[in-house]
Amino acid sequence: MEAGLNPTAPAAAPRETAPSNPIDLIAEATARFEHRPSWDEYFMATATLISSRSNCERLNVGCVIVTGGERRNRIVAAGYNGWLPGTPHVSRIRDNHETATVHAEQNAVADAARRGSSVEGCTAYVTHYPCINCAKILAAAGIAEVKYHTDYNNDPFVAPILADAGVKISKL
Image 1 (cartoon, rainbow, N blue to C red):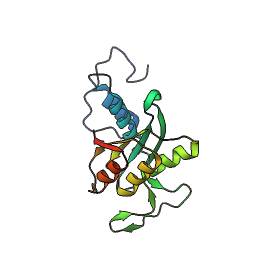
Image 2: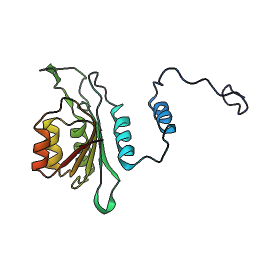
Image 3: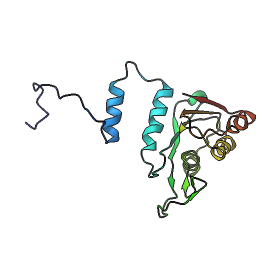
Image 4: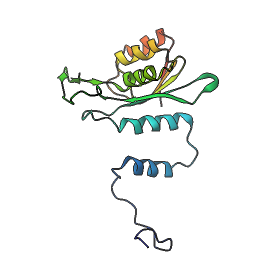
């Protein structure tokens, strides 16, 4: 029998460092749930996992777009921040901002468009507070609500622009 597969062997010592494998990280995180995760927890955890695909060295962001209404809680599209497909990963910084990447929210809306799926009335779960351009794209695409986890360079114009468009925004 291979090491670690013996059911009568003593339990392994607690891990002192966090696992580097995202699957192990999720397994450890979900093992700590004392309850079945809410839909908000589930979709934000999904957005966080998706953010791990980002190859941006500055910040990893993920976005999941989920249906509302009668067919609610179904994933329509997802995206993470990164370079355009097929382009070299060359950093181009202007005003302390990476200009060569596409934001997670933009990639999620583009993913829905490529699939021929409407995001009208959907909720966007985003790991970080959206920038002004992503807020406008989400509103223009018909997103009804934005839920985010982490404050990041919060632009004071984002909330009123979303409110003017009838889009709710809330921090989880």
